[in-house]
Every structure is written in structure tokens, then in C-alpha cells.
Image 1: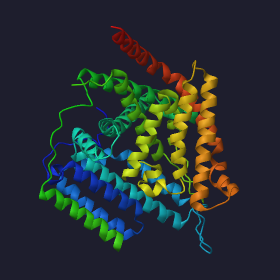
Image 2: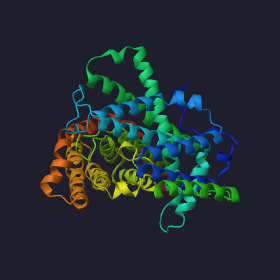
Image 3: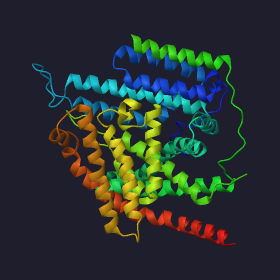
Length: 252
Length: 196
């Protein structure tokens, strides 16, 4: 079994699972935009606490997800490292490591934290939302715009969410297979990259083809019987709370 | 119930696959000191989308990527999102991606497939189109001169862009046989159905 199962739907009946997908999508967009506009440590701290509260309410297995996020940990460490060495030093400041600056480290830590917050938002959304429900929600929003192929865009939207973790799954599998064959020990970086990229893209294309065949054999159609989507007072409360959090971060 | 044609369905899946690859390419971004434009792999997958999917589906893949980003999903370089990125200094490159996928697909899709044509199309789209849009974006947003915009948005990336163009053309030759037989057989079956 593949090592990474993050961004897959995790069945459940928590309060977060039960929120109407359209409302959940709007909440996720509001939180993502707020995250990309924030810049202070206190903003990140406040939003992280709120998101961890949502996470606890969703009932998702935190230790398992943390373990499966090991590739993101590496990415975040790499970003912090690159940022720490990419800013010019402040006048008068002396640090014995060449190229390293405290401002760069601070900027890297904030950027890394932002990525963590974004990953938590995406995990909360994808882990508690079925792909079919996501497709219907996107279609519902797009049907207001005349001339747009809402059904196709909805399908592409949900397929993209399905394919991203699949690519990571394949990359992890190929990496493990290469480690077993001692390919990672080769010194030539071009050879190592080509040994990774070619099989990864080849396998991903084959899998996309299998996916299309599976959809075809199940008589996939862009015209289908739509299930009614209903919102309750509880959904509006969730939207109101998210708007309050985002507004608080914008105003303070 | 009307069934979606097999060719359209396959292209929808492949188009989504390229949207996903462009997003992942954006996450593999490396900032350059004192420069607002990071080095990303998104443009490499944009070139590959144009070469393998053609003009309209390549364009659709990139349009979907920008649509997701505009919605606020963290799909742009370094996990950025929102309309602020589209109208920011790097926004011109995003519009360049759209134009590049269409141009490369249009040139590479005309007549017989050849490596030379792929290379010319990739060079025109990957270097000239993307960077022209990028430079215009930087000039408009940062209100700089053409020379300064070229220094910020083109010169540091030119060697990387050439490597990406060559790599995309090589990969397209390897991956095209995987895609073509199915498209041909689907097209043939559609033709025979039409004849009946």
C-alpha cells in the first residue's frame, strides 16, 4: 500500500463532515485567502489554534496524518533553509555562518508556518468531503454563469484533487523501489532525476488511462441525476464563525 | 442519459492530470535572492501539456490551474493563492502559461509530428511567449523600465528555461506513444460509429 494517504476522504460523521459542501468550500476559500494575506506571528498562532480545534472536531487521526506528512516536513525544512540563506544581512549584524541571516530565518519560518496552515486547511476540507459532493458543489456555483460547461469543470476540479495524492503515492513507491535497488546512491544528479521522472510520469499516465477506462465502463456522463443539496442553520453558523475568524484577523 | 464520448472523457482526465502536475510543479519552487519571481517547474509541465494534449486541452489544463488559484486554493508557486497573485508581479507569467499552452499545442499539432517542430514550438512558447507576458506583467505592476523588468524576470531564468524546453521535448517523445494509440483507436471507433 502506498505510504501517503493524506488528502484522501476519511469517512466519518463528525460536525465538520456534516457541513454542506458548498459552505465548506466557501469557508476553505475564505481561510486560504486570509492565510495568504497574513504576515504576523500572532495571526498564524490564532489561526493555527482555531484550525486545530476544527481538526479535533473532525475526529481525523492526527498521529497517522502527521506520520504521512513526512514529505511535507522535508519540503518545509528545505524552504526554511533556502530562505535563511537568501536575504541580505542587516548592517552591523555579524553571524559566523556565511550567507545566513536572522531576517531570512524569520521569513523562512513564517513561510513554512504558512504552508503548514494551508496543508491543515486542505486536509480538513479533503478529509471530510466526498469527491462526488465536491463536484456537485462546484457545479452548483458555476451554473449561475451562463455558457460555462459547469459539469465538465466540476469533474476536472474533483479529478485534480484525486490525482494530486496519486502522484505523491507513485513518487513514494518509485523512491522506495529505487532505494531497494541502490539507485539513490548514484552520484550523477541527472541520472537520479531521469530515473525518477520517467517512470513517475509513465506510471501516472497509465493510471490516468485506467481512471478514464473505469469512468467509461461505469457509463460516466456529464448529464446525471443530481442530488438536492440542502443547508441547515448549523451550516450558516459554521460560515458565520469562519467569517468572524477571518474578519478578526483582517481587522487586528 | 447522454454519455460523454470516450475521447472527451480521456482528454478530461489527462487535462486534470496536467493541472495536478502544474500545481505540484509550483510547489517545487526556489526563491532567488532579491527577486520577486521564484524558479518553478510549473512552466515545464505547461510546455508538456501543450505538446501532448494540443492547443485546446493544454489551454484548458492551465485555465483550470488559474481558476483553482483564483478561488483561493493554494496552487500557485510556493503555496500562494488568490486574485492577489494573479494581479501581482508574477501574474503576467500565469497569463503567459495560458498563451504558451495554446501556442505550443497549435504549432506542434499542425501537420506531421517531428522533434524539430516540437523544439521550435517549445522554444517559442516556453521562452518567448511566457517571458514576454511575464515582463509586461512586471512592468505594469512594479512600474519599472523594460531593462529592469528583463533583469528581474528573464535573465536569471533563461538558462533554466532552455533546459526545461529541451527536457519537455525529450519527455514528450517518450510519453507521446503512451497517449497516441488510445486517441487514434478512439477516433477510429468514433468514425466507424458515425459511418454506421
